[in-house]
Image (cartoon, rainbow, N blue to C red; front, side):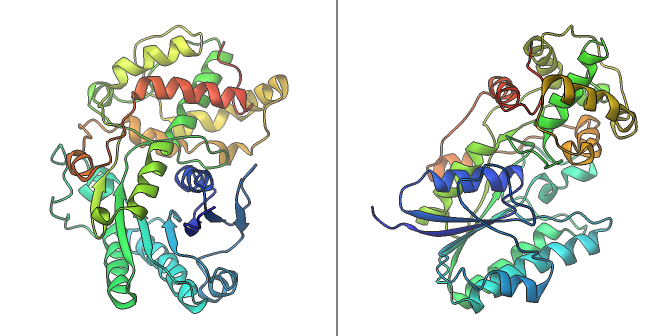
Length: 353
C-alpha cells in the first residue's frame, strides 16, 4: 500500500470533524488521528484526548503526533462575546500548530473551516450569492483572526492551506448539538409523540427565504480534495450541496418521511419550549431502546431557533470551487431523508414510521 500521509483531525467528535476523519480513514495509505475531549462512538481511527485550550496540555498531547503531514482543523468552542470567541478559538489553532511543530511534524497542508458568519450571515441581510472575494465585514470575527494567524504561520513554516466555507452542515454525529439534522429529527419525533402535526417552528420570513445546506460527507470529500490538489493552495472556497431550498418545501417532505401530518407554520421559541420536553424524549428513548444521550447534548435548540428565524436569503456561490475541479453535488431534500433513516437505523431517533 502506498503511503499517502498522516492526518490529524481536531474536533473529531463534531459533525464536520467526524465526517472528515471517516473520509480519510476510507482512503488507502492514510494514518488517521481524531482529536476531541471525549472519544466518539465507533470511531474507525486513533483517538487523542487533548484539550486544545491549554497550550502545555496540547503540546504534551501532540508529542506522539510527530508524523502528521495534514491537519484538518474542526475544533470550536462557544463563547458569549466576539472577543472571547476569538481568544479561545484562535488560541486552540495556535496551540495545535505549535504542538505539532514541537513534535517535529512535517506539516504539509492545513484545512480550516469557516462559515456564513464570514459574510455577516449572523447579523441579518448580506449580499447574495456570497462570493469568496467579498470584503470582510467591519465587526470583529474569529474566522478572520484564525485565517490571519494560519496564513502568517504557513508563510513562516512552509506549509500549504485551504479555507472551506460550508453552511448549515448536516450529518451523523451524536452528542454534537450544532447539527441541523438533529434539531429537525428530534423536534419531529417529539411532535409526533405528542400527537401533533409537523409545523415549521420559525418565522414566516424564514419559511420562504432561500437557504442552503452542506452535507458533512460532501464537505469531507472536499477536505480530502483540498489537501491533495495544488489548485487549492492558499484559496478560500464556499462548499454547499449546490442547490437552494426553502423550508416551505422541505417541511412537508419531512412530515411524509416521519409519517406525520403537516400543518402551517407556527413560531415557537425552541430553546424555551423544548427544554420542557425532556420527559417526552426520555420516554421515547426507553420505549424504542435508543442510544442514551444526555438531553442537553442531543440538540442545540438555540442554534435551530437562530436558523429558523433568519428571514433573509442565505446563498453562497460555489462557482469558484467547481471551476477549480471539485464538482460534487447533492439533492438536499433527498439527503435529509436519507440521513433521517440513518439516524433511525442507528437508534438515535425512533423509526420514521
